[in-house]
Image (cartoon, rainbow, N blue to C red):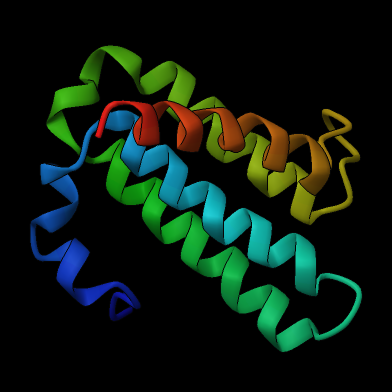
Length: 109
């Protein structure tokens, strides 16, 4: 399956800090939340991009010590997509979680 974020998948993603990576994932979560009830195609697209970026973060060797946390976040994203039946995760919860990373990333620029 080809990457939607070609430039990031080619190595640019590994140049970003963890806060920047998570903030970018949060942008896609925010888009998914915005389109969830209005346009299923755009919702699915944003969700897929969020998972792709999360997978790039999980595969980033700098965060090996945080794999448990990152894979748990991926599980929570999937739970929200499936209606929150396992962990009661909502896209609103995820949006709040990722927003803090975006604030941290901006503070360090």
